[in-house]
Image 1 (cartoon, rainbow, N blue to C red):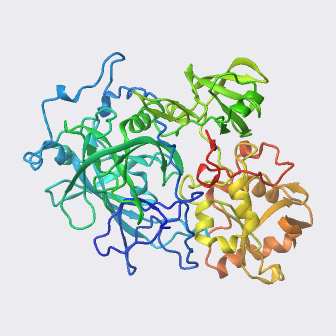
Image 2: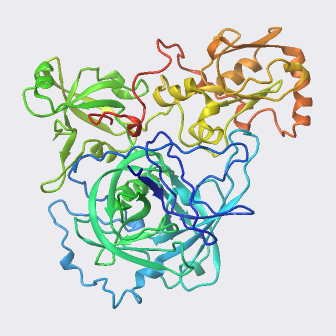
Image 3: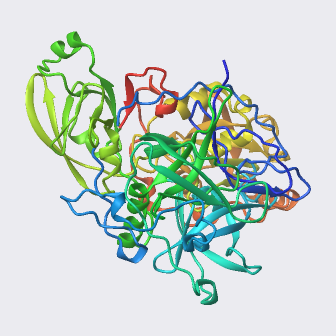
Length: 606
């Protein structure tokens, strides 16, 4: 059976060759839709440059199960006057017939909104996670973006990931303008750009945002994909609207499926309805021998959330999370056992320790309502007319810090509880905040936090099954917790006998259990003992003489051409990061921490 390949769309001017990007924590792969150019290397769609140390083997991916057509009544896009997000009156129904302008083949060439779509040229310099004191070879890519209100541009986050320079060029112009990245929403794959030049904004109108479309509505995708330098227009219809897997952020948010062609380079380009209004941002496609013409657009409801978050906080803070693993209650005997009389509700099977729900909900609770919206036994809620959508769509409408009222049944008793929603805390992050990973080198022993980019770069075979199991199955027990590993040992006489140790989790230092990389740096800096004793998983132990280690450190840095023994964030360890209890009964749980790897259709994280 053919394996589906999810891709984020990025185009290459020099080659149409593709390399599959393995989706972190996912059983499907996405491909970026920006165009990537590696100097002295062949073009690839991978948003990270190929590592010279390892070639990550691609695993076969299982087809991502959809929600079975489960489609929640969308809350109207919030008013965002500065960026042109429309306000929809509570009792009004958007009627496309009220709009005078129609996008027809005869007038598309002269349509003014095409001038608001620009081409993005980005130079990327990604971190080297295996050698965290340096960066990888720079590479370039091209994508698309479009103008919105407030002299801002919208594009995809993966188009400007690890950017060192971003330039944009208007349609019909031969001049490129330097752009600045104001915010990147990794989980929603949206980035906000600005251009200071007044000339760039002359004689062009920003795009207007439309409301969520309906099935079979016509859609026009505009951008700068592979195959040429000028603007490209493709047309299709809306095929499906449901909660969709976002490849770049490994998240589940509302998405629009369309059949219009989306190719590498379309990333960040707008999708228009028949009235010339932007209904979303093109960002990924599904490649498979068994499927054709499946592209995805980020709807304006998600865009509105991103922009409102940025306006409110001056930065992007993310989407909220309930922090529970829930199970569907389709079986009537299971509902009877749980004393649920009606055909509704989802069963709480696990609660994340770092979530506020951990203080309110218990395993065995049945959630029957979310903010007075009835939750069905399949984990769905009403969505427009004759449609239902996954329950966690309601959660995604909230902002970090918002409160939700849950109606639950506990041991047959109905009650209402309130939960504060916050972004999910990942023990092993998908992306590194700030771009550069933390590290500390002690007598040639290189310590760094485990992350999904590091796993991808090192190759799963060298990481080991135990670390992979922790990455896939472990939840953070407190905010700031990390899995700190010994990445490698830089050979020197002071560490003789330890040279072959690599990719091992360090559990304790001088008998104290390690909470995170900041904690390890603090313990080493404050140590007055004669010996430095590191205890690793699988009962490995490494002991160094403290004074000899300090003497050898500068020589090791010189020999290996390393500028500093630690990353800048570890020169003054954050005291707040040292809080938390690292003790645990189990090293890892029995259920994956991501919906993409859960093999049972009835279970999913909310």
